[in-house]
Image (cartoon, rainbow, N blue to C red; front, side, top):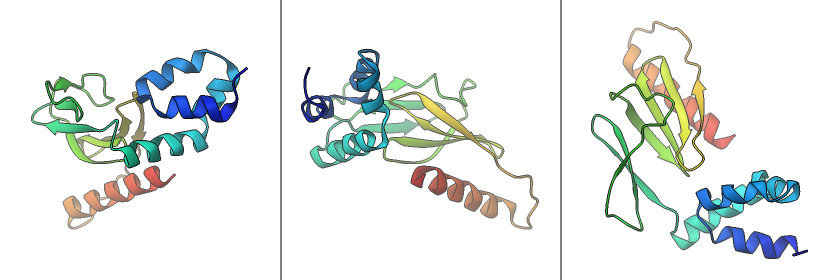
Length: 147
């Protein structure tokens, strides 16, 4: 059997979608790929080598463009807030995209894994609602991304 460092080095070279396909090889490899250490290594490798980057474009719908191959934009129709348009991209960091369809319908979405988490927004009626709500939304985003 191959050593874990050898397998890790190979997997670090691959894009996320390819890495996820290897989860089905064995339980040890699945545990390696799903572990926080490998996830951080893969993220840092992508940042350092400037690979696995994409651009998020927003008009009425959300589009994803592979930065290494700027040939075509692909509409992202599988995100958690997809309702035929009107979804706003609030921001992104380290592969996570923060989406908002309405003040109470928000989510953090990973384009590569297609995993997402809806965010709970408490019902409050502050005097300057739009600014405070955006502040709460950004606070939730920071809390989720920092884990």
